[in-house]
Image 1 (cartoon, rainbow, N blue to C red):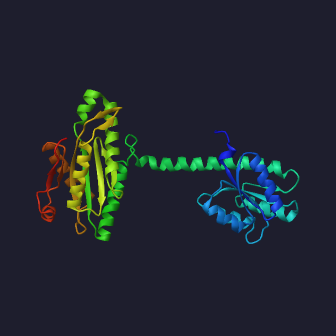
Image 2: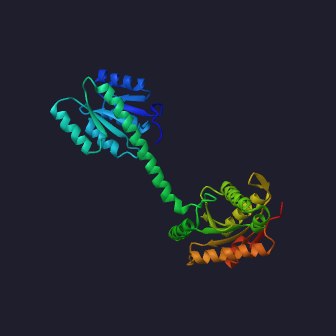
Image 3: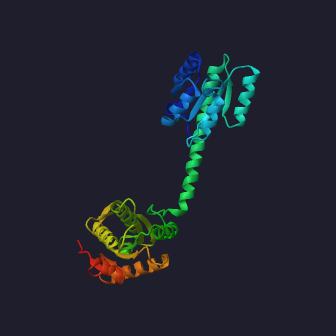
Length: 329
């Protein structure tokens, strides 16, 4: 467990009694915490929206918005803090504090002579609980993402591609928009694996994915399809724009060596492009098959080029041969 570091934790102190608030603020700052303060629950909520604090200390009874109301509001916030209630020593406030604990408050402290020390200890425990809660949430989120991310290249994997393709085809039909798919293959990767080793080949694949990611549009989505093949989904792209994008990416790979295992490695790639018009009844398997056939044709034609799937409608819309070779660098 990491050692608790007060200077990295901000605490929001909420109390309508200025003297009490200032005393608590002074004790926390002396203990190394960063402190913000508010005079009632409403002011605290407004401050929290712009400056969230992991720990909130609040009085129960305040004008405008009291401690219980503040607790309820903060529990709905995405960055919900740990809340510590301050109560008077009388029975009514103790009952309210017990109710606050039932509703999710971290602790409550009576306002008496020992309150200063108790506040510092309670904040320390609350801050550690908040840190552990956030760490668990982050780990859970990472675990949810793991099955959809390729561990080598850190781009989305084949499972994510299958899901995204179904969603993008449905979206294209629903909104009457085009969709293009580009399949890329890193040329001669086997030769790299055989001569320089699989570790260098892995570095080449990772660098290839990073280069593609840096060259594509923000709206495009890149996936590792399998082996040395990558898939790129281009929403709202027809055959011409899909082919132009593939040409630009193929050229971007050939124009500058990839950084593989600490050394520059001159590489090229091949690409096959297929498009889906909004009126097409074709499904994902057909789009993949046509892009795959175009990719194979590009490889057989000499690699380092992008070819468009044999689509009469696409060729007519382009007004030119449905292929485009890229000169080697």
